[in-house]
Image (cartoon, rainbow, N blue to C red):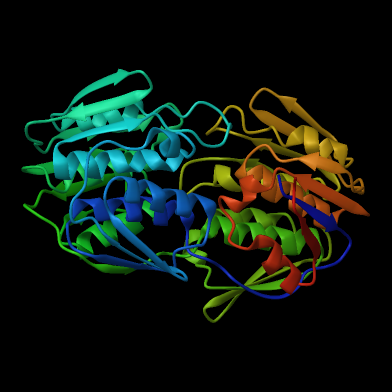
Length: 420
């Protein structure tokens, strides 16, 4: 397995272009299954998860062609059974369930895998599809859904930790070809859901209310091909902003959208980070000193769980006590023990991490446990004295396009070490 060798102590300076959002691109790619006509999707990040999705769509019968960051997909004739070995590797692959049900009225899809960050059941996905009239059975690791017809319905998709992002998208994709009107209450408000809905509307769907907790879908008879550009990745933008602050550098983020980053920007400013709009770009630098802050992860538009690990790495450098409370995933503190190897003083108390910051970090060999933890450990390594080797970086390749190359362009001393 590859690793990243990070030699810390160098402030990041320069410009970085933010890639397209993985969490928007995956369901948008899946949505192409809803039409037999070709679709062109631009600003698709070159990631292992994206390539997996391309393989999954190919296994279903679609023609998938990548050209740089543009992918053209035509699902002229497809089957309703997903490849078990491909789907089980990636949580996001469950988003093929909705479009297969919508177009074929049946689907057999294996239960998905992904990062080990806590229970992420698909009960709300299935609840929504059952409300549309689907019959559901889970057997031998597969989800079987079928319906003679799909009919619009009113449904509530709120869960224990709030709305479901993938579940909202999945149900929308099933409902666009259902008869009548579907109203989703407690829908996910994330920009990635809005981006999916905008793509579907470009295909001829009738969806309104996205970006809010109530989404209305009026079913149509068929969808056609469309072209679309994926929104920028707000999690990548937040990661580079935090890396700039952690290294006492100054970085300009091109392509990032401030309207997607308000909660992150608010906490970074509270922590002493200077964030300024520069035309269509965002400039980030550390202020006179870092300050401790309290952070609680919440559904959008609150502070994102996908930035929790990264801001924790930053707060280990802020003198004083910071508290991070994780309200979305119960097992998302696995990076704490690895940060401790670098010298961080962090204690876990239930859903909260108590950080006694201000002590210098020192490089050490560490192990990434999931996608966002990987990014946090790289940030910590950039700020630490000496060399840090981050192992299992296949996690980071799932969600960050060419992160080592982008960091080197900013002056970081980062080297990819190929595994055996």
